[in-house]
Structures are given as C-alpha cells and as structure tokens.
Image (cartoon, rainbow, N blue to C red; front, side):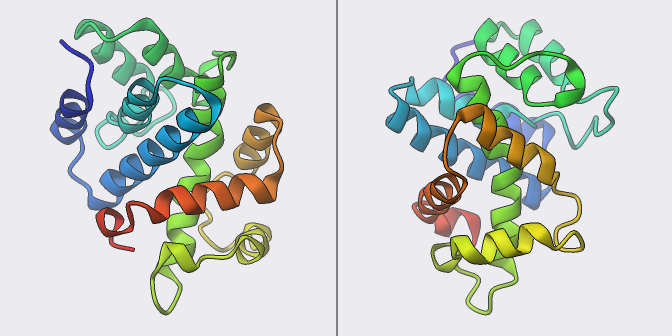
Length: 185
C-alpha cells in the first residue's frame, strides 16, 4: 500500500468513527506537518504518522492493546518501519525509546493537541486562534480541566525536543489555527 495522506485517512476512518478522535488525529497531523517544515523533516511522512498514530484507539483503548494492535495492522499492510516505530514510541508504556526528531515530535504534540482543543472548546468564541499561551499554561496547572490529558507527557515531550514551552505551545496553536475550520474551531 502506498503511504500517502489519502490512504492514511482511509485507514483512520476505517477504524475511527468518533468525531473527537478524528479531530484529534487531524490536529496531530497538522502539528506534525508544521514541525516537519520547521525542522526539515519529510512533511508527508510526518503528517501521515500523526494522522494514524491513534487509528486503533477507538477499538483497542487499553494499554495492553494500544498502539500494539495498530502497529500489527500497519505492519500487515506494509507500512514503513519508521512510521510504525514512531507510532509505538508515542506511548510511554510501550518501552520504545524515542530517538528520531519525528518520534520526539509526535510525542511532544500528541497530548498537547488534545489539551489545546479542550482549551478552545471552553472559549466563548471557540476559536483556536484566540487561545493564549498564558491561558494554556494556567489551565495545565488545573488538574480538573481536561483531566484525561497527561501533563507529564506534555512536559516530557517539551524536554525531549529541547525547546521552550511557551514557544512550543504557541507554535502548535498557530499550526492548528491553519485548519480551524476542519477542527470546528
């Protein structure tokens, strides 16, 4: 199977029906594409990696299954080893150490994208472009807000990328703003 956006999206929608999970996948794809441009990565590869990183989650949401089952499916369908490895490395529980910029970036944007969408949803205007970095940082401290988002993963992702937290948050907000219509924000 050719690995391109069309096939990645088809795989995603074959396994994922939830609107919120689809929007999460689109947001991670967009953040990955933006970082690929910034860091000199392969934008198509990074984007489709972000798009499929959680494609199995709706069917296999447990730590025992996700992303293991998804990576088995990717392997069966002939997906590239570096994409499969990146998908495996985005979960701390898999034991796969993140080594490449693509792997580190996927981990760094995954939880943050979910958190930023939650921040936009509670805004009166529901616009991702109007989410402010200082507001995000304040909400990160509020453990009751978007409690399913792993704050430790966000911090560890920033650390592994070796970047400034404010710059990272602002960069991802700007990236997501480019597809705000697709995200309903």
